[in-house]
Image 1 (tube, one colour):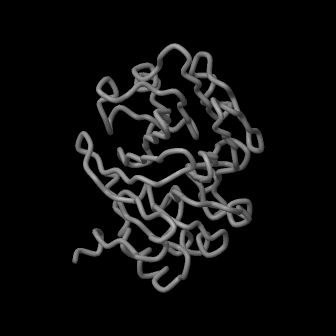
Image 2 (image 1 turned 60 degrees about the vertical axis):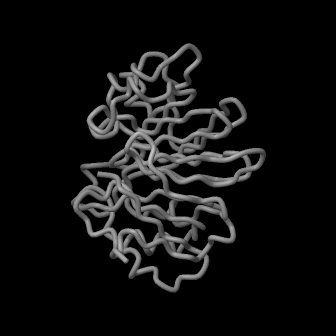
Amino acid sequence: MNRLAFVSLIGLALFPASASEAQSGFEADSFPVQGGSLRITFIGHATLMLEVKGFIVHVDPVGRYADYAALPKGDLVLVTHEHSDHLDTAAVDKIRKKGTVIIANPSSARSLPGAVALKNGDSRQVQGITVFAVPAYNTTPERVKFHPPGRDNGYILELGDKRVYIAGDSEDTPEMKKLERIDIAFLPMNLPYTMTPEQVAAAARAFRPKVLYPYHYGDTDASRLLTLLAGEKGIEVRIRKLQ
């Protein structure tokens, strides 16, 4: 079996409905949540789409990864920071509809008319979904210029009885390592902008997500994470196509 196609069996009892399937050329996984299901579509790089009980969440929509005119309009759009591989105002405009809520870090919000600016530590409820803005930044001195402390957001979403953590561009910060009760986590893994596989593994061991997806991994050998976390009980590593 190709290592990139391998799915760890740890945690499948917790998420028995999980499956990878193609939709519009993208892989997708589904999870049971209270009162329905959560579907996560892996679009590309750091770009995701989540659907829970008909509610659509777009994360860092960028037009180079998808034709947003052909995707569902968003009820909620999340932008982690203003780099061009995360903030694309044209893509956001294509998925806006009446009532769309856009949440972004303060510097990105200035480029998105009507956006709600959340700084680290802020939260917002949108139609029963709670969004927490959490710190995302570089800790290695020579990398701080890419993502300085206090500017960018990661997000925790409370979707029914599941907590989903989308880290944005970050290293394994002290705040990340102190997270609790994370069911599904997306951690970035590429140098020099985010983390090495070793940093991702260290963060995962600290806050112990039940399901861990590396994302924003570019040319990094994502299968290295499978080796680093092999035998780590309670953490299921899943690798999906995000290029």
